[in-house]
Length: 80
Length: 210
Image 1: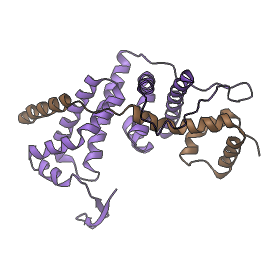
Image 2 (image 1 turned 90 degrees about the vertical axis):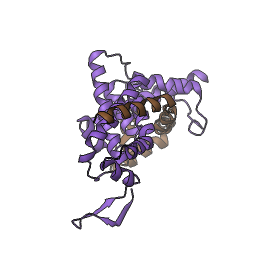
Image 3 (image 1 turned 45 degrees about the horizontal axis):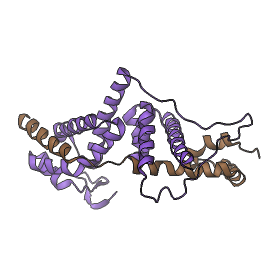
Image 4 (image 1 turned 135 degrees about the vertical axis):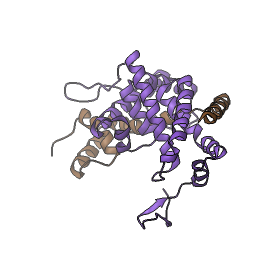
């Protein structure tokens, strides 16, 4: 069984998380994570990234945007 | 997604999706403007967030919001209820935001190079990896928020659109392929590179703070 390098492992992380790898490839990848703590940490941080981004990029819509939208739609719908 | 046998379609086909907006929608389709305003009120915040995340501009996001609901209103007679109203209008907004993002890409392209991990000749990871421990549970640090906002804004349009639609909006690869016109393998490749770049930005934040 050939071993994965860190480069191979990182290139497969998306498919690994999506559960799309074959059993054989997944086993080799997990063996690499077990032996390589930087890759294990990398995987944790890669997994955490979407959640952190969702949190960071969530914005409350300003009240004035809502008011402008309502005014705009009322004007436009009258024309329609 | 809720399915209910009582909502079988008129031809005895598979059950239709129960849409929490169905009552307002029926009234709006019958010409009740107040009911349409009710639908807008329920969905405007999510649409605004999508547009803002995609375009990184409050002005553009506000315009996409207006364009999306006007498109939805004009197309209400053609909406047949084979998707939920929220998903349908969300898709309309994704298309509007995408058009604007692509137009902007043609007009002026200011994109940062993607930040990817570095390896030695044997393919081993050279970078130090910071510990993201507890980051998900913490209240978001204002500086971390800024670092992520900057990194997201610096992603090229092709990368930002798939990252926003998949990781922030939760669309499937197939839905993204339909909206963007890109193949599923291309979408996965862009998403992976976008995540690597954003992960690196967060990693730099923690490394600088250590």
